[in-house]
Length: 118
Image (cartoon, rainbow, N blue to C red; front, side, top):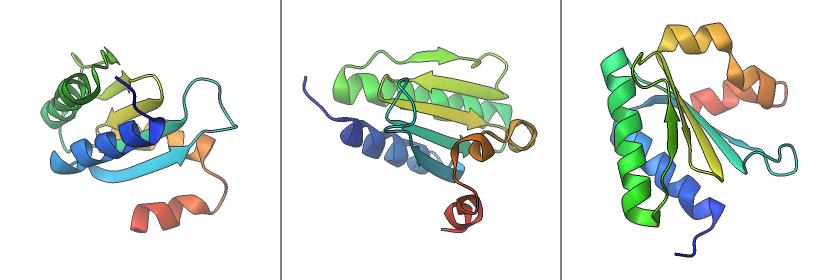
């Protein structure tokens, strides 16, 4: 199947939104990282919701694009990494997200507040 990173990003954003993820932030990594084109960071309210958001996302990526996303951290449910190739997704419990502050590493200064409010 042929698909673009933008199509995968759109599917990721729809999936996490459908599953009621909170504070969804997308970060454009093109030209900044060889690992992926986009990163998506979001939160679930509990370990159970974090695991559910992640599982559903992996299922949808497989169904829509044939992508076998690699997933790490699902058993603990504090922070799940879903690697779909072009788009890397981090699903956190809020306090774990606050502790690691991945957005601050990747977003230009001053853009975090605007993206969280939007």
